[in-house]
Length: 180
Image: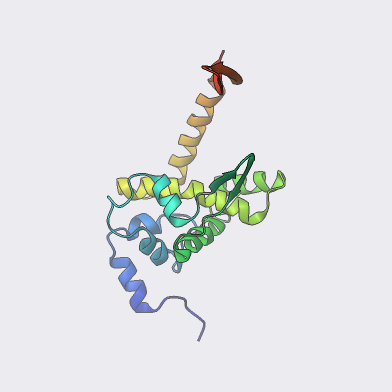
């Protein structure tokens, strides 16, 4: 008998969940990851007010740390490891089933980024999408997301470039943005 990560009973329970259709619509979320993603989100939609709260809670959001003149980025240690691993595994599975995720992954790898760093960055992006689908109770649609991404890139290309410069005010130096 082949190994099955889910029993028939757990498959049945997952299908009965009110958010099953939303989670099942996500690329790469197969029979093993759908129940894990459902468990990661829970049923209380007011628990997270923004996608960034979910990203931080899950441990996918990077932590910026500094001491003196040194600054570094590391991953979050104080988080539910099961949730972080769930989002990480799901993001890795989306590379084979989502065109934009594959393009993003390949672009970042071509820039020399390590695999796990790219997968975490991809999970960071996916959590924003998942959060919006979950809050609005709408299934994921790849074509809708790609159209939205194209509109966003088109608006960004029309914006004037921003230049940064140091400005001294009341004896303090700060960076200010200058748009042309």
